[in-house]
Image (tube, rainbow, N blue to C red; front, side):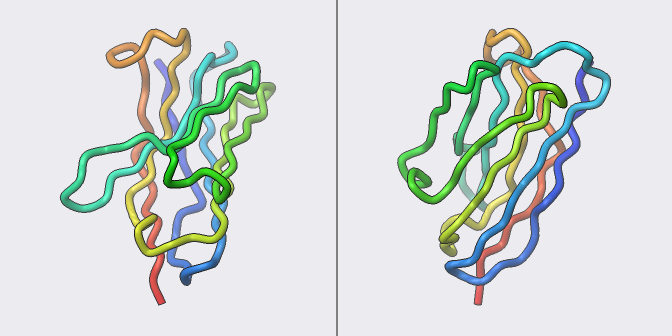
Length: 119
């Protein structure tokens, strides 16, 4: 069982930056894929970015060039650096861990952290 603990959300003005962190507890092996998803009010949860243990990344088009995902494999910790934030980035951001890359049903979710972009 993997429990994911997220931190770093908050309120920021448009154009500002935030850094999210996610660290799993109860895991002593390297998690293959870790990532961030988000869900805005009234919308479905969507992919933001993922990263494999080998460093291969994938980003949603809406965040390319503004967000950077990275990880520390020794700590199984994943980060999301968010720059040039826009009001439409407002959402609850969820950390996801897919230990073996098997997809839905074989992955774990954090509790979510609120990101609000507003002046």
